[in-house]
Amino acid sequence: MIKTDILIIGAGPTGLFAVFEAGLLQLKCHLIDALPQAGGQCSEIYPKKPIYDIPGYPEVLAGDLVDNLMEQIKPFQPGFTLGERADTIEKLEDGTFIVTTNKGTEHHAPVVAIAGGLGSFEPRKPLLENLEKFEDNGIAYMIKEPEVYRGKKVLIAGGGDSALDWSIFLADVAKEVTLVHRRNEFRGALDSVEKVQQLKNEGKINLITPAEVVALKGEDHLEKVTVKDTGTSEERDIKVDNFIPLFGLSPKLGPIGDWGLEIEKNAIKVDNTYDYQTNIPGIYAIGDVNTYPGKLKLILCGFHEATLMCQSAYQKIFPDKKYVMKYTTVGGVTGFDGSKKEAPKAVVKSID
Amino acid sequence: MIKLQIGMSDIKIKIIDREGVSHEVDAPTDMNMNLMEVVRSYELAPEGTIGICGGMAMCASCQCYVQSDHELPEMSDDEEAMLSEAFNVKDNSRLGCQLHITEDLDGLQVELAPEEA
Image 1 (cartoon, rainbow over the protein chains, first blue to last red):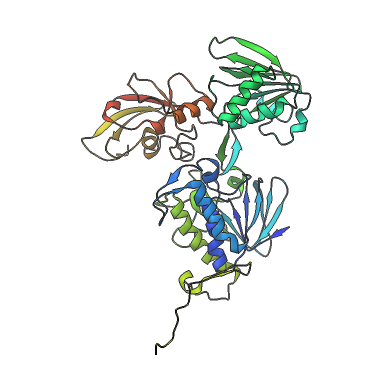
Image 2 (spheres, chains in turn purple, brown):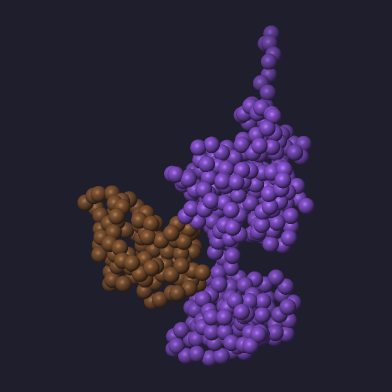
């Protein structure tokens, strides 16, 4: 069981900055994120896009902002549970919480701060009949264990990097790899596109474009998919053992929506007059995931919300202590790792 | 009906929402808005189901079908790539976030594509 002071759900910019503000109050944080890396949307959707409204940065790439935040919070040694989605929450008698991920990892904390942004990123699923029936019976949206496909007939759909990269990888593993994409053009790293071209020429990848999968066939396990040529509208069945649609990820509020929190417009209602607490005491929501009158989904607003949340969390964890806010210019930053940053002391010395 | 602002620079746009209900709305040409933002400001689709990526052509939640024969700006590579991955795409599909509100679009008629499951 992972124990911490503030359990932060979501490792985007707001969640990361909360670690810093908590650290100034000597509170430890642990973050859970469904994505395999920290940074949330900034890393997943637009790492190379410049942001112009971070105070003090005339321009900063989203990916660089995440790198900087990671550097800023390093002294406070946050823990991370990445690649796992927070699934359930249980409130114990003493008012503390246990949050369990989809992989069964348990986290125990007196305060939970949901910084979930748009929700957890889930694979985008094609709209096909019987799709659910074949999930885990031939259809997968992520390749976790490539060896599963050894000697199998695999059909991949999609036109982005992951479709290209996995087609290349599986060309050496699977018995047969077919790549189906709606356009003739692929969008991915040039290397990958050229490699797929080469494998196609060598007959190691069967490329079908412009086309899309329109139907799934099979008894219990997937046996065939129907591929439609989007140019001629001709349809044909292809025998497959596995179908892997790789259409990217899209965010879903997900299980958090079932935690008994007050939800409005796909976001969690919080008390914006004070501390961004939800209707459940001890659970806060900060950043894009919350809503209140006048809410703006901006990173800079998330930073502010994270800061006030930490003050309230401190009072909740230490009800008898009185905290006086100290500027970092005065108090410096003392990390849990023993590091200390502070302004250089002025010299007081008389001049003869 | 909510009014965004009253001005000489408004154009009329007809938007058919995901339930099939038609809305004729005024859209300002001088507020640096795109079609996705117009849809959101009139709340013609629930928050969280449109404009998810914020307007960077990086999701397809603002996909719409353009039903009038207006001359539209060419698709950027980003928009084209996104629409090649999106679902429910038709020949007249565009991403609302990439359609800037200009006087040329007066009388535009669009239908919002279904929400992705």
